[in-house]
Length: 56
Image (cartoon, rainbow, N blue to C red; front, side):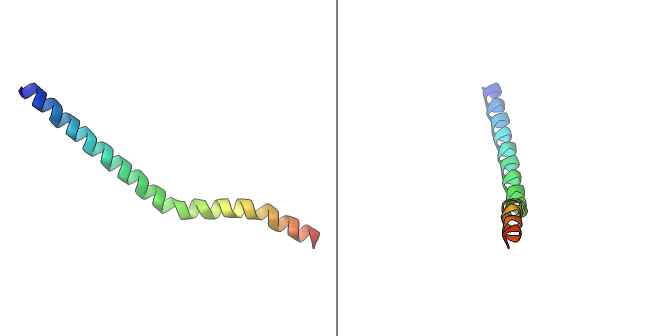
């Protein structure tokens, strides 16, 4: 019975660690998202702006 309890405790610990890792990943994504969004925007808008400049 104690082995089973220990296994459950270990499982609980693993889940807690997993939750912490997931939260950290989400937090980092939330921090980096605006930066990545801006990069994507410039990558997408860059060629369009160049094309407009060439046409003008």
